[in-house]
Length: 508
Image (cartoon, rainbow, N blue to C red):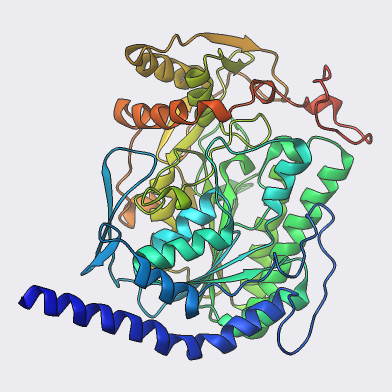
């Protein structure tokens, strides 16, 4: 009887908390909608959509997600198995047979974090990870990544819900709000209004076109990649300077900025002695696509802005990410992350796993000696948190190499074959012409101690992780379009003619 009375009291207090929060959130909700160019009670603000974005109607772009009737009805309708038990959320995920649990805490309480690009692969997982730990999180995203799939006829192997459904489900399961600002950071008017409203203490910047193959499809997409990425980052730097000069930026860079030099790769800077004089200079960069070059331009601009305006910036040069599940995204199928397998947006290990699951030979580009740094998506989100909790010094751009292990393409293919055979998968490996212009056999030794020094405990690639990823790929293998597996374009054939869906690879 005592237990029943306690549960009734907790339910009443939970509903009251949501009701009390509705008024407090109403002004923020209206300002979010206005910032995104959505019709509100005070009128309609229109804004030109990005060229590659799908033009959305005011209804579909509406952003009120936090608090209010939606969350209140979700609390009342929640089934017994989908409930908050103290600080623990225990839910049976739709995609697995086991129960997945997230331990909620308040280690980040009081820190406001704006996640730009929070609807994407790394951004979505990071936003949930931070929210689960008590950070006040807002997502800013133009949703253009979904539009690129529509353009090219691609789709995630895993079915991903809309960003509004995702945020609402997270609120339903955990009781924690994630604010949502739908708009383009290249539009400074939108960015400034949303920025001033949320007033971030930290900004995590994932919001760029992140595919090297996409940037090499044709002239139009090469120009778009450079303009979108470089101008968007400059806008964020100006927003920091003008509105929140104490804000700390955590920017996602790429290990691809370094290229494959015949010397060890340091973490951002290199001590040089030349003609008897010594200095510490930015490490030489050798980007291998217009995408990588855009990241190099970002890094140079951030060094300049941090020094000139006394800003705090952390540049995380990330390796190739693999995996689909974090503790948070595994809570419910509505929260599941995207898993790309096509040749434009899919990354090496994820592509190999999916190819094994659907019975397609693993496509090794060229000789397969290309070596890169890799990390688990669970380590990505942890690195973001470590960077936030240990901000850069004022006036500096700190660089940390964000990867945990190094593998060649041949080594990855061999690992997938080893794990796939016991599962009854007939895993074959084949070499295909390399669409990229790159060294296929080279020296590669990159340093990565800074994040470990801050407390990163890596999830190293092993049979258990590959087995779990393979099972997810097998579960959704019927969604795979085999025609999207082979390379869509070759670096040497990128030209002024627009690349269209279904076009065959041209010899480079």
